[in-house]
View 1 (tube, rainbow over the protein chains, first blue to last red):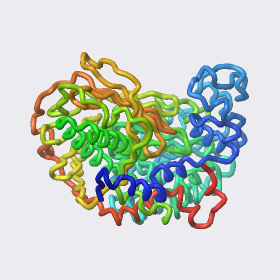
View 2 (spheres, each protein chain N blue to C red):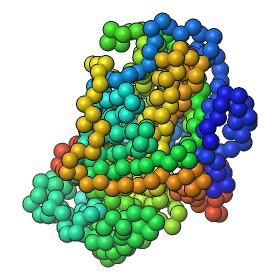
View 3 (cartoon, chains in turn orange, brown):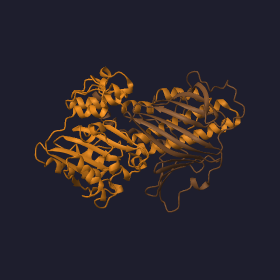
View 4 (spheres, helix red, strand yellow):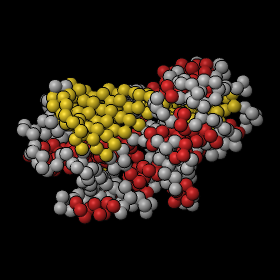
Length: 341
Length: 222
């Protein structure tokens, strides 16, 4: 229902008592209770959440130390993240997470729409070699989940993702005690990873998603996404801001609202342009404001498929979806994602 | 789900504050609105302390069709046909989404507040700040003559995004840029109506669901 200016006050009253997307957003940005004390600045809330999770793992990084964008103010230098020196973020993490010498097993996991093992996972591929080189030359284990057709990775069932996760977890659980486990996946394989954490009875060291659609319907059984991967010492999601496949693989609300607000932005701009041509500044201003708001919402839903709220998101430039598993991405991941963490 | 009911069923505009673009303001002489435009886009996104840049291209036809290119994809919006088409150039796929007239988003906004004037690529602009319905904030530079937003900077809890138009050219784009390229496979989808969208919104965010299903201790986390 569209409204006229005459109906504006009535609509405002309606709006005042209905839930807005802002409320939804506020809930999405739900942080641990202690964050407000540690880090009152809203600018570092996202970081605060990540660090609060790391607190559960015994890490000592404080939100205040790490919750600023200015890397010169970040912590560490002596193996303790205490803000004493101004080292870089990566150095900070490398200091805080000293790599051990325990044996590690790294799993590579395919994405969707692959009827057979994709070439990038095969031994000898540039990707395989780059990942093996990261982990002291140890060849990664290949986990191919075959139920990855379109219908098996999408709403409502996501049956293929769940099946792939169960099998992966069974394999990981069968490893010898004490073996360190790293999980690396491309595309929807990342959702297999985080879903698998519900079946794991052991922690994961690195959980790395490459171009994974951050899908609000996943991980599992209506559990919040942050609950998945909670056993991972370090979670990193590499996302290209030009990767449209991440959006298309997201949940129906994310996809729907992205398209809807994109259309709405164009529609409001068209209206604004019309009124501007008529010299009607009042109506132009209203529709221009709505255009800005709609554009903001469209951007939000685009990013919602890329930003892993409860892990580190590593943004990339104009890389296509299939490029996200290539060595150019792997090699550019910060050390805390794959080595120091 | 109840909380979210009505999120998107209405379109409304909230007029707040001292709107600079108010009815009392005399329109600047020569304003004519955007007709046909082509421009380069440069978008910068800052996430987690890292900044990425994303070049693209903007097209707008006189009939309101719009296309934005970004990396391996393009978004084409046709207001008359009420479609949004996402082109995946890597996979040569076109995802055509129809927007029924009955599908209307909830949308609220405050009028922007002017913060200054300036020039962008030799053209006068007005700088204004605005607040989105999610509490996100932004700054927009509006071309005084065209009404075109030539710069938009938005901030949210997770990212800072800046989109700038450069090399703005007033001309009718080649109609082919708004069409699905030959050889692309086409999939179609129709957005649900507003009532169905309410349901969709209610089950949309998994972070909400457990709080509505018996984990009240988390509901207070804001």
